[in-house]
Image 1 (cartoon, helix red, strand yellow):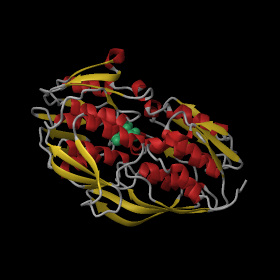
Image 2 (cartoon, helix red, strand yellow):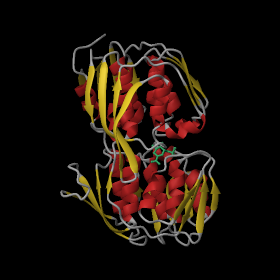
Image 3 (cartoon, rainbow, N blue to C red):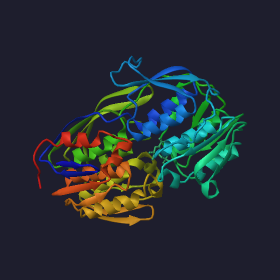
Image 4 (cartoon, rainbow, N blue to C red):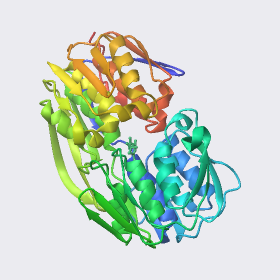
Length: 444
Ligand code: S3P
């Protein structure tokens, strides 16, 4: 195996074996940094997510005057690196003198916009080319209804967004898509709004914000798919972030699909609103075991062991999609190596992620000989059970880069992933871990 600047060349090893601890959960990390920045008091956050998305949220919060620093002694009793946030309450932030740069991170832009809507000053938030092409009207509309003044490109549907906040009032809002980013943006703005804000979701999306706000003493009620948030002051909480199930998913699929594999993945967050990948793999007959189940600060976690399996096709759609949205590209790889047909429906949201992930997945897997058909809201995959290495692109999207990396681990011959550094958006150590797990010579 060889690594040439921005390309990774991967061959399938005889055996895939090892123990992996993926980086901290990106969604939990971003919420912990952001909510503690507007809370009262000092908090310690350990095992934070890694990569460019972490830099993006830190840059935006520090641009708003948040007091965040790396420290060496942590009150969460862990040995991993630790950040201290000193919150000065809901009005503790200051007008940024420069444009806030959310980089490639949709969660950063949408959640920080929730905070900005509550601030009595002007901010401008922008991102990279991919983020500035992603839909922002989904937050602009309801935040405007709450009283924020927001303008952006394309009739305020695209970033950069200029936001002058303050004087918000609670609204009753029915969401059209099950987006945790939209829900969380509104919940955060609701902390600053007079009265109550009621948000009704069409299906359950990840509930990390609800859990964290609860533990911080917010005025929040949950009634099925309805979340009601009242004006609140938050109390800082320490957080030991679990490993990211979205990063773990790559090793789960590597372990299940390689003909001679056993991978143990440590401390994975298995919040049921995130763990759809485990359910889908279970329905495909995966050889997966959970050990050491425990609760860490209101979020369930476990160690997961994935071993060589005989996977069969399955159906993924409806309310389940929100629980597995980020794992669908790598699950499509598993489906390509399974027996039978897999149908993915109701997943049109994939088209507005860091790339059009339906197009990117179909393109990448087809290049390796998979039988994957594009549908407007998903994919139809006939398992071919054998992939052949080829050259493919990351589309500048971290999850596509890693999906194709795992495909290379499972395909015969050599797979080359171009623009492979994109993996560093969420998993800077991904390629090293992949090579570490590949213990022996090629199996082609
Ligand atoms: C996220 C929610 C999801 C997910 C994204 C992270 C979050 O987006 O795709 O990677 O942290 O809230 P949507 O909620 O917009 O689907």
